Amino acid sequence: MEQIFPILILLLVGMGCKKIPAFPADTDKALNLFVIYVALPALILIRIPQLTFSPAVLIPVGMSWAGCALATLSIVIASRLFRWSRETTGALLLVVPLGNTSFLGIPMVKAFFGNDAVSHAVLYDQFGSFLALSTYGSFILSRFGTGGTNSIGGVLKKTFLFPPFLALNTALLFHAYTYPQWLQALLDQAAAALVPVVMVAVGFQMRLLIPLNDLLPFIIGLTIRMAVIPLIFLSLCTLFGLKGPAVHVSIFETAMPPMVTAGALASVAGLKPRLAAAMVGGGIFLSFLTLPLLYRLMQ
Image 1 (cartoon, rainbow, N blue to C red):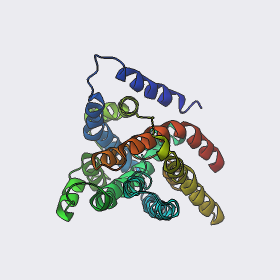
Image 2: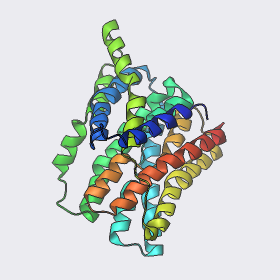
Image 3: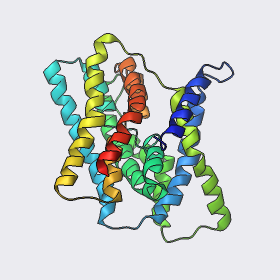
Image 4: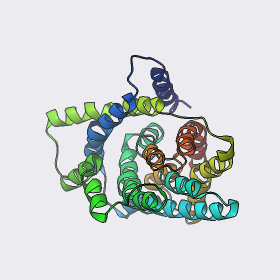
């Protein structure tokens, strides 16, 4: 509980700020932009050069895509079993396979596993969740959402120009390079802002209310996202004797609640906006219980 208490307080601060008229209604958007363009790229530029390249670096990427595929299959089966509407199915196919592995995942990994484990979380997020959002997410939006489809060229452009992805490729390119002292100090200060800024932003934009008729998909979706998928990977890794920081961080990331961006895209596309928002907000609160439990199971 000691690890997550400061994060929970920052989350509540963000929720409190929303009640203060002095804060503009789109404060969370400004904070998110700061994270995307400044804090997260700085953290990536610091941590990736510290990563020792070995076959273990493939674990976060592989587990991220495997988790996405398993969650998608689970939602398809549940949708047919419970005869969910097209909008409900599309919303769940967007928010359940895509976890909040960046905004919430990286601060949580840092809190539970320490700074040295952040590089594994970055690989999981950038080569897994983010690429899945850009490709798989675009397909789901074009298949189930309202509006036009996304072209392959458009998806690739958004992917390669995304600031954290640019930072990741820059860090990989200059992996053996030592930053000047002034630049290292600048990156350290920018990266230090990530956790407080992102948690205040998440708290500011959180939604918890949900229509009663969406309660069943809400429960099933979060159960798959935050319990079934991580427990399957934990069982498989235990069965085959896989362990170590890369494995544990990857399993931990599979248990993150639905991605904030995925929930926002579901709302924009007309895919059960209140259900998507409730899953994002409810999942974040639930994660303060489920993540410590999963961490204990891995010890």
